[in-house]
Length: 194
Ligand code: GDP
Image (tube, helix red, strand yellow):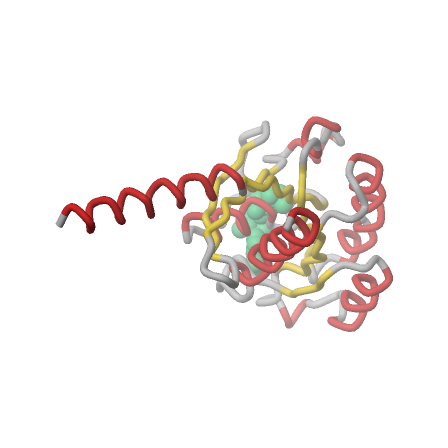
C-alpha cells in the first residue's frame, strides 16, 4: 500500500513537471468572420455560436493534448476576439507564439486573398520556423464554395504550411487542425531540446 502511494505521488509530480515544461502559445489569425472564434470554441468547449460575437479583446483557451508518446502538453490558444476588424492585432498578440492557424472562409474569396497579409504579419512578428497551418473553414458551405481545395493546398505548399479544410459548424477536422499544429510544435521543440 505504501509502495502504491509512493508510486502515485511520483506519477503526479512527474506529470505536473511535464505540464510546466510544455505550455505552448498558439495564435489564430485571419480576416473577420472566417470562424476563428467558433473554431476555438468548438475545439475547447464543443460549442458553436451562430451569431458573430460582440466582444472585443484577446481571449484564450488552454487545452491539453496527448502527443504521440503518451505525454501531455498544454496549448494556450489565443483568439483575436474581433480586434482584427480594426487592424489592431499587435506584436503583443504574436509574442512568444510557437504555432499559428491562419484561417480563411472557403465561401468568401476575399478572405483567401487576405491570407498573404496575415502570413506576412506573422512572419514579421515571429520566427518563420514556428508551426503553421492554413485552414479553409466553413467546408460545410460546399454549395457556395469560392476557393477550391487545390488552391488552398498549393498556397499552403508554397508557404511551407500544413493545410486542412474544417467546419466549426459540423466539427469536421477542427480537433485535427489544432492538434496537427500542437504536435508539430512538440516535435520541433523536442528535436531542439532532446
Ligand atoms: P471570427 O470573426 O473569425 O472569429 O468568426 P466567428 O467565429 O465569429 O464566425 C463568424 C460567422 O461565421 C458566425 O456567424 C458563425 O456562426 C459563422 N461560422 C463560423 N464557422 C462556421 C462554419 O464552419 N460553417 C458555417 N456555415 N458558418 C460558420
